[in-house]
Image (tube, rainbow, N blue to C red; front, side, top):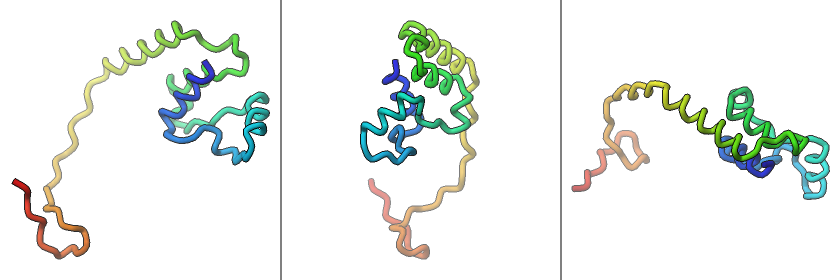
Length: 114
């Protein structure tokens, strides 16, 4: 379960867990993890159901971590709650600006491909 929780962290944060601790040697990191260190989630994620699931998966007491059956139930619930939300409105259409090569703002637009 612990590895699954770390994978959840990687998916949402798109980074390397524990990078914030600036540890050079794996043995030092292992010691910190055994003492309760966990990768930090952004505040807007930490208090969400997703953040709670991740925290539960990396709980310091392995007996308190959820089983995959429980995780599947929670993910299914998250999905169904998300499916019930209305789709967001489409973005406002902005006036289209012809593309240039980006070097000169006064340059002629690039020719369109046929």
